[in-house]
Amino acid sequence: MTSTKGNHGNAVQDQHQLIGAASSQIEGTYASNSHSGAQWFKDAGLGLFIHWGISSVHGDSDLSWGMIADTPWDSNPHRVKPSDYFKLAEQFQPDSYDPDLWLKPAADAGFTYAVLTTRHHDGYAMWPSRFGEYGTRTHMNSRDLVRPFVESCRRNNLKVGLYYSPPDWYYNREYMSFGYKHRKGEGPALGLEHEPIELPAKPDGWDEQFQQYVRGQIIELLTEYGQVDIIWFDGGEEVKDAISIEEIRELQPGIIISPRMHGGGDYISSECYNWVKSITSKPTQIWEHCDVWSSHPAGIWGYTHKTEAYRPTSWMLSLLSRVRAWGGNLLLNIGPRPDGTLPDDLFVRFDEIKEWMSVHRQAIFDVDSDDYQLYSSVPVTKRGDTWYLHLLPEHTGPVTLEGISRPASVRLLRNAQDLSFEWNDSDNRFTLNLPASWNGETLDIVEIRL
Image (tube, one colour):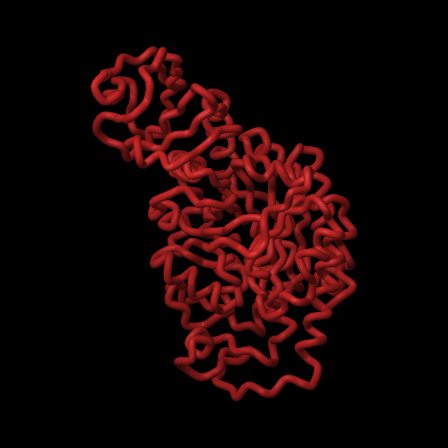
């Protein structure tokens, strides 16, 4: 993933173009997996995205993207020369890594799946891959950081997701530019010291060799860790022939495949909050929205010293509400520290979400959704004759519903308070004035039974 705050839409498009990410906001070529083991994803609801790698050692650089000079979406002047960035692998020693300390509080808070970056664009493999020369096999005495994550997911009843970036900037470091402007056709190529260079031609057979390398690593991930529930590709359309969707499903019949490598998969994918707010109708396919949870001003995905603070729970719940009301899943990102621990702020957020879910879970999971904007002034989720009205913190004025039958009961889930409402028989119009106890500080849910 990529730094996306600020001018979100343009940044996301630029970054996807730079990594060769197939279009992620259109219906894909492949239908969703009909295997019984893949049906959970339709109502997964909430996932934990974990961007972790060698960049965390630096403390002021995003994962991979900190190497790219002149990017318009991040004003951080502390760009890392690629030559220095790649050396961070020598210092990456997560001695306090215990994924149970990440995943148990997440599961308790209502997360149902987790996705770990096994290899980001920088090319550092978080497992002792037999392919390539950059990863834990070469720099960490073959320590495997992926296996403990997978095993912890299973212990904590979370579906296992493995993120893999086909683009590899270490592997191709001698034959690529680390300058944003050049990659957009507007400036000179920049080398490992961010110096202007003339890019050399690749040796004969280089691209074919790279494709086999990518294929080998993907097969390792799909065959050496038991059942993998999601393979989360991010870019690499130019090497999509390294392994086909059909081959992946032969290795993992019940797997969910992201659309960002092959141009199609089991769902459509989006990122950045503004995309969710711009939706005008429910997507026709299963979809997932990923977003940054930290409050870093540049929307950093990996860990930096400035990602110790996380956005308030009210922000997270509002985003979750919008996504679920449109029928999607929210994949919310965190960035562990270089030693493998999480920022303290995250545990506060997990506890707050756990408390909220203890009362409101039924409005988020195992619910139906539709084009609620056609009849409601607020997001709506449903289960049979029970409707849940999502009162976003920013909402003002009365809540209205049109074209429904007269409710049998209306109550505020937070305190089980029965609420009075106005009813117009002539047009089946429901009006609810905001309850006096509503303070607009977090997401409130009103339950309507018809």
